[in-house]
Every structure is written in structure tokens, then in C-alpha cells.
Length: 265
Image (cartoon, rainbow, N blue to C red):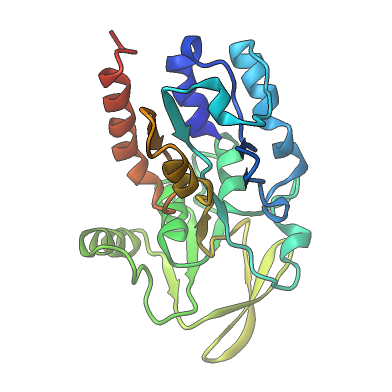
């Protein structure tokens, strides 16, 4: 959603309708998965678009009738949330200390700069979990990262993996591999390692089991407008969930498209 809003800041004069849920010739329907959305997010886009641009938020019954020159696909990605005991009861609750990556981003300015006496526990040793570790390591928190497999960051490229390994060693991050999450509590994770189950207490806990791209609409758009002079571009994590740092490259790509269309002249 934020990707869309940032893009619209440049092209608002040329855009008539903003939409997330849309239909194409009555055949395409895209809806946000309610299981991964909090109530406050349901009204976020229409409210923000109206406040920031003074334009209405209208559902598109038929994209083609507007004769678009450019379609921006920015449906993003959503956290993968497994059916773990206590997870849905505690994650992203107002005033709570258990966060998904989206919950963390929503409260990004609320975390203190100095966390030297605070414990941070991160469930998930993939790209998302490592982004959280990198953020809190700079704030001197006592960090533990939990990974069910035997290696943290195993799917990352070699350069990124080596960089994160050096950072975790430098900041004394506790790497708990071959450890699974059994239950989520308000101030602790119940985990199970080689020596049995135990509680991992925290000041801030993060469940980062990966992200799932919400890109079902993109290939259908490409197919529907294949014979038309319509440019369709994808921004954000709509096709593949990635590390946050990869957004810098995406930003360059967006600026290229804006320049090519003359919006920055």
C-alpha cells in the first residue's frame, strides 16, 4: 500500500481512480486476505488516498473502460502466519509486545533508540527475520534468533549471508538453530530445541516466518492487455517477497519509469 501511495505522489494529476480490489471484464477479482489484515488496515487505503490526494477511492468494475496508458501493480506481500498456539491471540495487538513484520513497520518510530537492557526474540531465520535482527542490533539489544532448520539465512545469496553472519557475530546475537516454536505468549516464546522445551522471554518478540507475495492479479493483467498499448509495471513485493533493503533497487526502477514518462521533467 505504501508503495502505491509513494508512486501516486508523482503521478496524481494523471490518475483518476485508485483501487486495490478490482475487476477486469467481470472475470478478475482480487481481495485482500482477511486472515492477514487487521481492522485498522481495511480502511487505510481509502482514507489515506482521500486525505493525501483529495481524490475518491472507487472500486473498478471494469479497468478497460478507462482506457489506461499505465497500470501499476502494487498488491505487495503478506506475512505467513502458521496455526501456532497463542499466535493470533498476541500478534500485532495494540499495547502488546509481539509483532509481525507489518506490525513492526507500523510501529517503527515507537521503538527506543537505546535498547541495551532489552531482550529481542525473533522467530524465523530467513530474509524477514534477519531484517529485524539488523534493525535491533544497531540499537544494542540482546537478540535471539530462532530457526527450525540447521542454518540461518540458508536461502540468501552468499554475499548477504556472509554479511549477516559477520553482523550477528559482532553484536553477539544468540543463534538458536534446530529450534521450533511451540507457543506464543505475551512476553515469551515457548520453543523446543535439542535439550527440550523452554521459554524464551523478551521485551519485544517478532514472528517472521516469511512473506507471501500477493501477485495473483499481475499475470492476468499482462494477458488481458497483451494486445493493447498499455504499460504494466510491478512495484514492491507483489511478485516476490524480498529483503527490505532490496527496495532501494526497486526505487531506482520506479524513478526510471517516472523519468521515461516525463513525470520528473
